[in-house]
Image 1 (tube, rainbow, N blue to C red):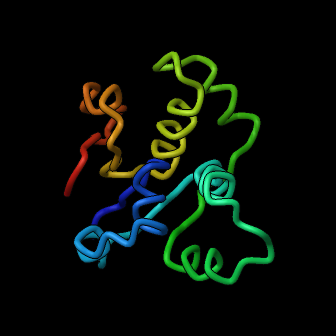
Image 2 (tube, rainbow, N blue to C red):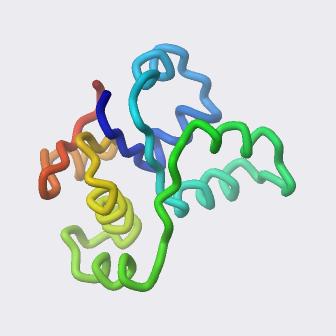
Length: 121
């Protein structure tokens, strides 16, 4: 079992795009997602609250809280994109083994600290 952090695009694939092959690959691993990704999902798909569907998804995933310290770290990089930095620092906070993303800029980094950045597992 690995600690997997799902970038916002992966979280959206997991919840809305219903990619069964993705869900099968993730089963048996500890899944983490940033609270920021939940907000991105809710905004992009116009979720209304209360929302039982969202609550069901979140029962399967551990949320990484967003706080001032994480935000301040994100302002220092490693990229020029604040949202990407928040995601990367959230993954580091969980000591994730793998950071799953489809973001080509992040994939070029290959690692953030000890966390491997990949598009598939």
